[in-house]
Amino acid sequence: MTETTAQGSGRLVRSVPEPRAVLTLLKPITWFPPVWAYLCGVVSSGAPVSERPGLVLLGMVLAGPIVCGMSQAANDWCDRHVDAINEPDRPIPSGRVPGRWGLWIALAMSLLGLAVGWQLGPWGFGATCLAVVAAWAYSAEPVRMKRSGLWGPGLVGLSYETLPWITGAAVLSAGAPDPRVILIAVLYGVGAHGIMTLNDFKALEGDRQTGVNSLPVTLGPERAARMACAVMALPQVAVIALLALWDRPVFAAIIGVSLLAQAAAMRVMLRDPKAKAPWYNGTGVMLYVLGMMVAAVALRGLT
Image (cartoon, rainbow, N blue to C red; front, top):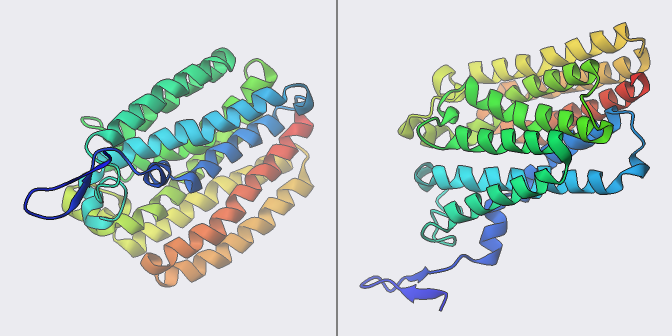
């Protein structure tokens, strides 16, 4: 039996998760950033992709469905009380993923991630260990770095963008990436702090009630949005300057045009940050990640 009736309420209580709810728990829409960053690393490595297609595909599955999916399950388990306030229809507070199933799924996927990471060699396995530790440190007590509006988004940005980028470059190069690749990967990871801050707007009320000091909570929506925009823009300015310095002016110009388009979208978002943050995540953030691949192609010519 997958459902039982709660005494006195007539309400059906599940004993095993709904399959669709498990997929919702893993949030496939969030898999794109780390997969894209891994591909940026692959491209920027300069190594011939056609010689190692298996490593490329395995790294994509590891970065997205396994490790990112695990991090989402862990976060939803640790945030089940917050979600009961913000989004009670989510899989765990709604009961569609009942009992401790959310925890077991996150732990099982952590082990699966480490097993798959082992297949990518020392660089891939080391990066997977860091990613798993970061996922639990972000969400779980007693560390729970998401309580900080500074360190929480920073950890996620580096884990979603910098770490998979460096991993992709290292796995394809079978060694340490070029320092210029690492520098660009770090800059885009720092800029992703702003993206994560905008993502915190949807949980504003629940964060206030449960002591999560996100920047929208501590600074207010307007100031937090302005700070997020600055954090997203300044690393891109540094990327443009570095590509120009490294004799890649066409690529620098393309990213510059992308940044100008982001600035226009930022102006719209800043008129009503709380309402427009989701809109910006579908417009300005797409321009941001496209700039990442432009930078990766530029680096490929250097490495």
